[in-house]
Length: 331
Image 1 (cartoon, rainbow, N blue to C red):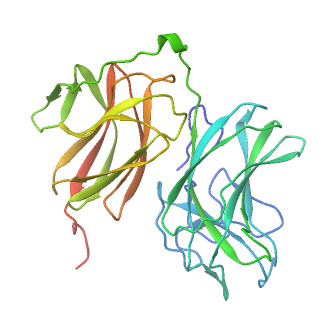
Image 2 (image 1 turned 90 degrees about the vertical axis):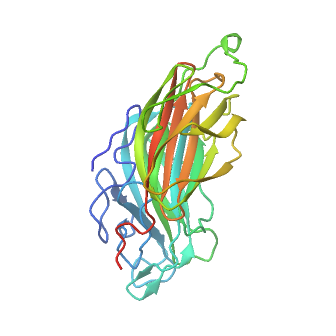
Image 3 (image 1 turned 60 degrees about the vertical axis):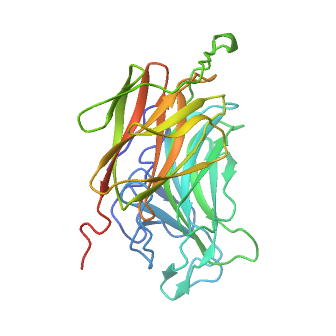
């Protein structure tokens, strides 16, 4: 799959490609003196499913090894639109660690970190961000921002050591997401709406059509299993005073909540074989409209990252289809 995001500098930020050893996905090229990153899952005893799409990349750093001892893997991509000196750019990326990574006879079973470098057309480099030790075996989303002091024409992703002496470690990388800038409203035009409980108009299937006359726009659809979902909500951009509510169909599961960097977990019961709309309702408009939240939704096995944006005229929603927990399972 070939992905280009609007207002985004990167091709294939979800690292979609054919699985294989020493094979990078389309848009990304192995960089440096070490071996090539791998497209996962399936190579070197790595079985972690992708956090987004079907594939992702793994990279290693080496201590003593059969070859390339004391070197580390990296990959590079030329940006379609260079990063401008002094401007701040907002991103998130999903990272994990595999404790079972084994290449030939060497175990790469220690956590590494991801470093992101910017490189200019005249080969100057600047370290833009580093994750620190990635010790989580399940995917975790890291939010970060960069403000380059050089013109950045290339992104370099690099696996690197957390400590010395050098050792054999790995990092798994998926879903590099760019959040384009939004127009900031002048402070004296920020709209503050008195919090209320909206009137919900539903269709014959119990799915909401509108909230207080604001049309519900379905933006995506996901399948989950079982009788329980955990929804995590937070602001992964600039905190600007947004107040929102969340609805599962017409049930209010989060009321008049001020979004911040602090994550809020909500556990909801669902019925197998039923469909739901998870809808974001805006009670006001912050400094940077529309009101936007980041969400993780998981049934304990499957986990999806989405964003929803709503304003005073419309509400965004995601459709959740709940299958039986053991549907399509092999007996």
